[in-house]
Image (cartoon, rainbow, N blue to C red; front, side, top):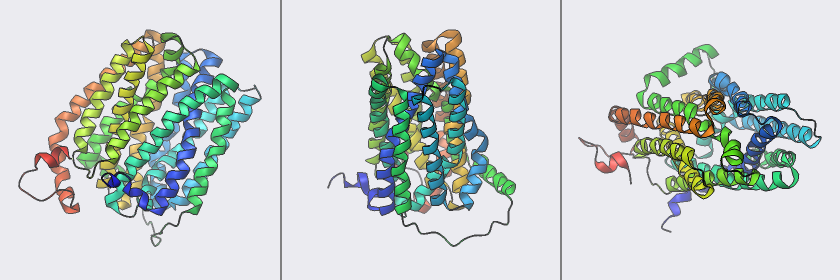
Length: 429
């Protein structure tokens, strides 16, 4: 079949199990994200507290991710993920119980969000590093990441829309309940996997020494350092637009929970289109160019979204924002996973987690503060301008990082050896 390469990673049994389990669980996860933001805004009416909850849910990841990365390189990743998913399910059920009993308050939302952040500090680098064990052929790794992104964004499309309907009909508590139950699917898929465990290695180095080794590698290897710096900026300035969506839905566009679901669903459509376009790629060549373009598209999309006061236009712009966000996220993930050596994978992916998730709590506070002082539309336009500036900076670094990457790609057989890189090598097929 012409496009059979687009789902080639599914020929690996373990990845098929993961794909099916996560497809169910992630719908619940997105329902909880939407329900939490709507609950906070319903309880408080405060843009600042939306930012505080976002900060509480992500700051543990920023603090603990590097230490979690060392443990991911030491522990059985499959067992680690079973524990993190079980704990995340219990967290959602606790939210459900308090909300359905009508006794929840903002303090409990903040503490439970912080607990989820603590779990994510171990879950996210563990899941990223475990991907290589699920997909034994490294040539299929980029496709697995793209399919995983497609799955995330299909859930992102379905989850917010479903959450809007559930919140409007029976309240936020049932979104949390559905999410808590949905974790059973991914836990079952993990338990059914047959993973080849490499012979146990002793780790004579202390955790602190391994932490320093991982930091030295990330700091000294220009391609990974540059990509992580760009996405730290985008995570700080751009990603927190999500916490302001309830304000856009209710005050800027004069809607309700359904409007919030439509906006987030449109963003999910754009992200899904992006992930599918990456799944159709046959090679990782040209992904650095896509990182550059996607950062610019993301920034411009946010600036224009801040100017819009019409729901259909805002939904279209959310589609553009979602496309740019996911294109850069998945492309950077693929490049990093392709370049990093296996013995440092957990630690490097922990810094990826810090750049993607760990900077967001500071961004959530910044976005909430800007929205409180200047209004949500101006806050989004300012942060979008910083993302656009980041894209310009990354463009100035492209030539130097390609020089470093090219010998590695030649050794892996991704790029043919030659005196100069061809246009095809630079931009990909």
